[in-house]
Length: 274
Image (cartoon, rainbow, N blue to C red; front, side, top):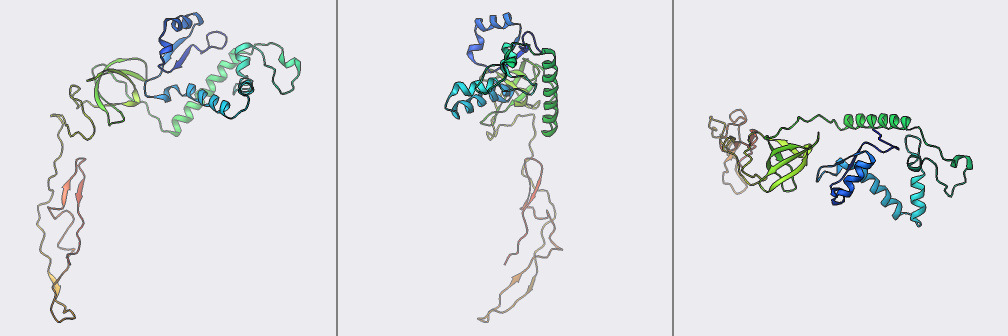
């Protein structure tokens, strides 16, 4: 987990252009760590860096002196018991809070203890997060598989080209090759990758059968019998017809019973015809 001086072996960042330069690649080799980028349009994959940026923004916007705010942030102890300044420089920084001079003496923390503590905390956090969100392990995708890429306009189809890491894949689409997270990809083996599909377009592959709006009943509805002919105030008789529940059953009226695209039978309610 830690290469030298507390620096992690793998560093995750976004896909900023500053990380694609040869100078940064040389920097990663000199300091002995591996650089990995998160999936595009998936900020959750770089959540630790996004949280750090949000914390610093709150510090700078809510304090009159930004330097004192950053100093307090750098000297605050983490869950492992050491502050960021101790892990970086091997000593505590002098702040506006009075402290014994003996505590300011340079002393490197126990990096083995910090490594084990960080590993234990992250494992515990992952366990509780997966249990509370009912996380499941998604099946691995292989090159050549057809997938549905989720997007703001509904999505589009594509074909898996290459696996970047355990959670990111390269997908070939009609508009070019893109990179997406596994959570943004849905397996769709019945779809043809050469035909783009968008939600609501009505395009259905020829090998996918879609149920039509056909009726599901064969028994005709018996005509309701009038229960009487009460006379109105003017003296004329009015015919009143009431539906008989014993003669009309659910799904017996062919004009009201249909099958939806999902296969559910939809039956209109029988109302009194007054």
